[in-house]
Length: 365
Image 1 (tube, rainbow, N blue to C red):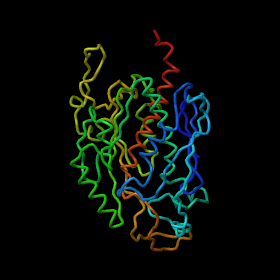
Image 2: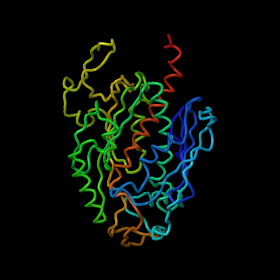
Image 3: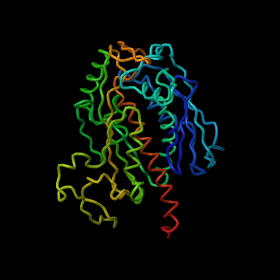
Image 4: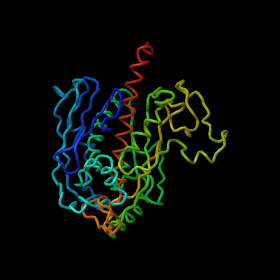
């Protein structure tokens, strides 16, 4: 069913949008990691609905419970189960969708594949599933900070055709969280918020791009051929709802350069470390992290649910006009920021554990 992600640091998410609860089981977390609810709740608060006028008005506090895997404030090395109960579900808003397919949603494909679907809020296909990812990502972030000082920051980089100017070497969490858009460019932010709100008022939606930088990433994460680090990062972020594209480093823009222009030349810094003068590789070469910041971008489509009439068909194939109801984000980008961070953290933590298992003993002095 595709509900499990990772190799050594493995997560399995569960639950539906309008069911009793959603959550995650985290397996493979090392023992003796200090952890409490507050570590996880801080990340869930960034993801939760009802934050501002440019997010869905659904009111969920998303309070988490840790039901296993902890003792005396430390992880046991056993599975960690994190649960978040649904409190503001309104299944009646989706009654029409019981037999009618919403354009650009998973309704028709789920029905074709399984012969049954939970039509209440999209069920398993809802972005509410990402609560489990963000909760698990909070644990992965904490591990990475302790072992390497790794910092993972995502931010809104583009809304429709409005492009932010972001210095990936210096951008801070405070700059990102300083506004409801989660964009560190104040001038662009003001324009983008007005743009999103104008689409919201007309019952429409808009998409854009979330950028992400991971700094102080250990050298050596990733493996050649099938388990390249950028390949796993691509799978991770492209599994997020509404994601439509992935770039790392120079991305598609790099195809306009020559090899001479694109290559990252090496040098030895004052601490004796091998560095690159540029970072068009995005912190990964040959599928393995090189110690430079990992820089990636994820494209997100406009929210599929819009409050305007659209042509569609019923499950029986009858042509109808559907005006969806319910509470939805006019733009997924602000809430996608912690989701992207979580998926990047899960990949890096998993690869760090794999690297330690294969190479760690040999590299110890």
